[in-house]
Image 1: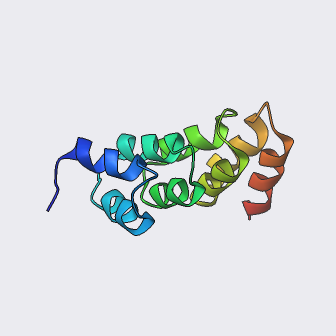
Image 2: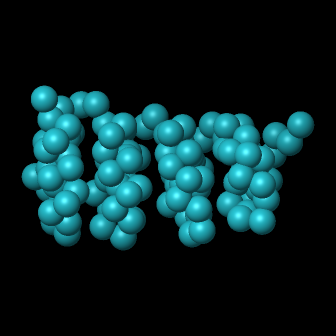
Length: 111
């Protein structure tokens, strides 16, 4: 079994590798920053980006992604759905300077 972190990340980001193999490689990555890298850097497959994001549990990383205007809207919204803290959702809704759609989306999740 492959356990080398760098090889796992290379497999996860290689669009020529079968998507199920790529997803399996992602499940073997535990480092939150590496998962963030995969979620932000796969240019060809949003499904892989979202899958990597499902593995991210660090709320600071999720908020960074949610507020990063250079990240596409679908990934930003997906990150926001993983934020459960109402105060953090409020911050996203109030502080996104670039995209009104992101602000509105965060507002829909505030209870």
